[in-house]
Image 1 (cartoon, rainbow, N blue to C red):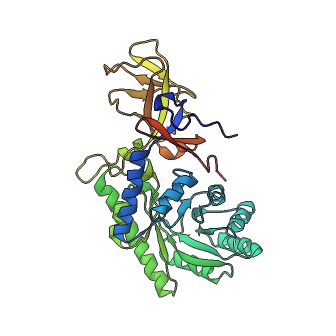
Image 2: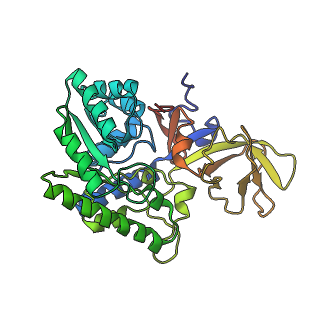
Image 3: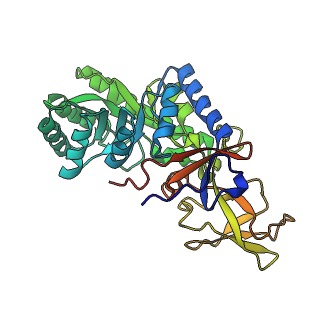
Length: 374
């Protein structure tokens, strides 16, 4: 059951109920505009990943700035976004099982929907599901370019699978999914670039083999927030699938640029607002944001604008702020902003975004696909 919004339009930020998912609208809009301008200047398409924000409203903002559509990772995410009016969705993942395939093909009657495949048996099932409802499904062959997660081997194996798709009556081969997810969080700049260079060689060779077999790749998709610049200079990928750039998080903040400085191409615009709920000692206080308020899988949050204050010892509903290294006085009822360790799972914990500007609540947006896991 969706929870009531934690604020009202016009409220002061200090009056927002906590824990709450806050967007700094100025930083957020600059992030959207920067990526839109970059991809336009680079001559590539932008299809941002909606698994980060799970929001139809944010997807519309991205498309208004030139994005061709969005990516989703699950059928249920795509269903929620299409129902909310988003008409171009790539499920950048494999969809397996009769129930999910039936939902996928039904959805393709209402919007432009594409999917990835890395197995010939799955292609047979996709074709059958699409045929049952009379649609032609767009399918990309996913190749493993180094992440070691999903994807058929690049080269001849990918061509063989593409031919299977091309022969299927109810499917249309439209290109390659070549996402190197593991490279997004390689901290060293040179090593990160090297990982994408290796992926480039594999992807380019596969495109050439497909062309020799008479199969055109309209789309070569991939890239993420940590590697998008490398992908565009390669001239191999023509569609970028960056997601976290809209918000950023602690994990991306640990990547390094070529000069060794922290990765700061985009700004932190997403925060969890929390309240000091217990202050019985001078050296620490307890806030109302624990594991159920934050995605801690990639590390604990940073305390925004309080660099000497650290977050630690989370339990289900509580977190601890260490005050031993600071003169900053926090008292009962004070509110702090936390930069999530990992933005995607943090978003999935909330029903609402609270958009703030100049200290006031300006927007309340539902998290459209919250909990969409199937």
